[in-house]
Amino acid sequence: MASGPFNVNEFQELARQALPKMYYDFYTGGAEDQHTLKENVAAFRRIMLRPRVLVDVSRIDMSTTILGYKISTPIMIAPTAMHQLAHPEGEVATARAAAACNTIMILSNMSTCTMEEVASSCNAVRFFQLYVLKRRDISAQIVHRVEKNGYKAIVLTVDTPRLGRREADIKNRMVAPQLRNFEGLLSTEVHTDKGSNLEALVKGIYDTSLSWEDIGWLKSITNLPILIKGVLTHENARKAVEVGVAGIVVSNHGARQLDYTPATISVLEEVVHAVGGRVPVLFDGGVRRGTDVFKALALGAQAVLVGRPVVYGLAANGERGVRRVIEMLKDEFELTMALSGCPSVKDITRSHVTTEFDKP
Ligand code: FNR
Image 1 (cartoon, rainbow, N blue to C red):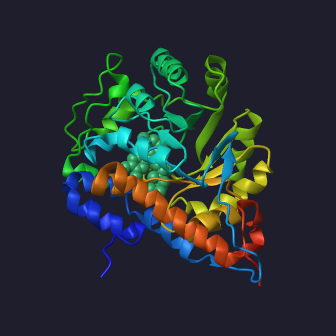
Image 2: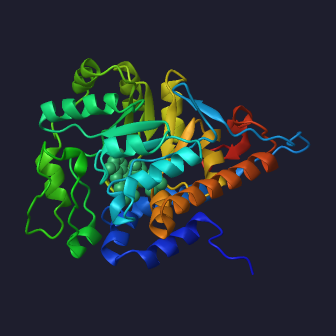
Image 3: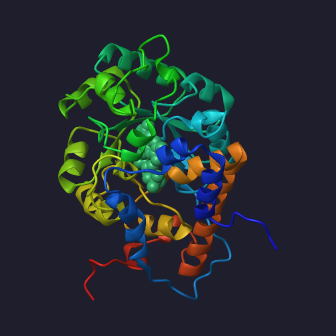
């Protein structure tokens, strides 16, 4: 019998076996009732495909271009915090896997390896995910290092003025490890009697007052393109374009922030319509199959980001595990394109899917 894992979900079970419960719960968990967590995945299952037959699919080209960077497939690596809890090589291993798969990794501001270590260990195109801190001077220093180390864009996460209530972390008394991008700048050792220290950490260092006006400040300190991550409504999508962002990431933070936000795939089209092609729209939340990638592209995303599956691959087998996860999604996506009659990503259109909102 061939040996697995055979799909991304089977990697989750390997991660569960590999990790202490506290870390596994941290990676898998969502906010409060975890309703949105389930919906992010379930909403994909309610979208059906409308394949076209008798199309020449002898050659399938999955490649696409994001902000001018050509990648082999529209599957990117989402920023997720603290990879060394999953594997000793941490974000360095993840970045090497991104390079091997010729895709883009977005490094989390809350990484356990420094942005310098990641930059010097691989030649992947890298973006950097930023949280703006109360200490703007420190954020400015971080942005300066991001530029110096060859990161090609800043992905500003805007859905986390406070940390969502993740009950598993509170019960498990989950404590953040050293977050080395802040080394020498800021202490991230926060003590609390509330179980986990994550909430207090976020409250202590992130700028809760951040507003649309501050995008101007960020633009004034960098020439890098700025993408906004965490948009779920047409109102905010229009506003983001108005303030001059280079791209939007439709995301509910993997359902870890505000429970009872809709599944991201169910609001993607609303955002895409509001943006009207003025900037690229990326998407994340619940991507577990190549068909999910196809569905997101059909609804107007330029590429998807993958969060938890990458961490599961890392926990199961380091760099090779991450590579395998990306390759699996890539292979499934390629097959979906072939069976749907779409030889290239530009052939994937709205008419290749039906959603529950479509009229009969
Ligand atoms: C995240 N996410 C996240 N986002 C961000 O902007 N900065 C961060 O540091 C983190 N950290 C983080 C840790 C963990 C363990 C998870 C699961 C997620 C959110 C992430 O970028 C992405 O939006 C979701 O993970 C996408 O959903 P899936 O693919 O996990 O379903």
